[in-house]
Length: 303
Image (cartoon, one colour):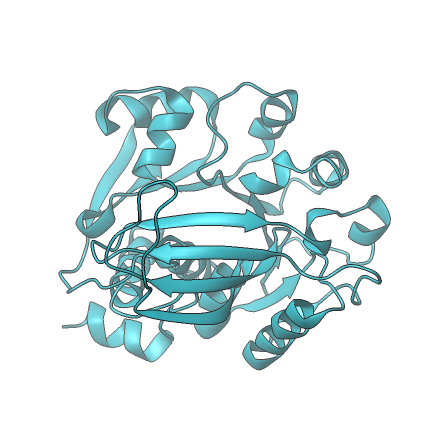
């Protein structure tokens, strides 16, 4: 049975809703505020809610935020490969969502910012596993090189999924260049694809991604759906019309449900349609880990 092995970072989000961000040095009142587990948890929860077994390979702290992270993962049935890291807590992200649904993040990493070769050796991947890699991990001095070494040693049959995130801008690091040949699935939003390639629009970005990757591309286009395929065989999969209130976690819902679909034997376009439905439902809810489960996705795709 396939599993999702997530090598990214689970952190705790302080989620605040507000009309608009203040100017620098200003002050506003938030409409809502709550602590919620997010980061890599969002993708894992989406996959788990859609029938895929999930293992978190990252670290988690022993303080109050670590306790929140573990409780959330346990509630979703996510296995944790590592015990709590002594002397450190899990990190925190302040997530600000404006009335326009635009999001602003300020993060501080904790125990999850480090990972050693010994940590990664604790789990033996299987040939039908999907290994999820976050671009944030490539920016972490205490994690990037051991993770890359581990990825390069994996059997070729194991599928590596890469999400660049907003902070990986281009092919300007040795780590990124070394990772490119090992990426089997690229999943990102449109702005991330544009930033990574330096392209002016998606018609340029998709061919440019293909120049660097021998991978299945999944590029989200907000409410319009996504682009999916490889080489010259890339097609647009339409989205679903909904009333959005919070875009936080929508891309993660898309990624987790897409991988779950592939693991369940769906073709990429079929998995992308389910992922589009999951992302559409996610933006109708407040918070980071708002992916629906299988039944809700089924209901939307069959309407």
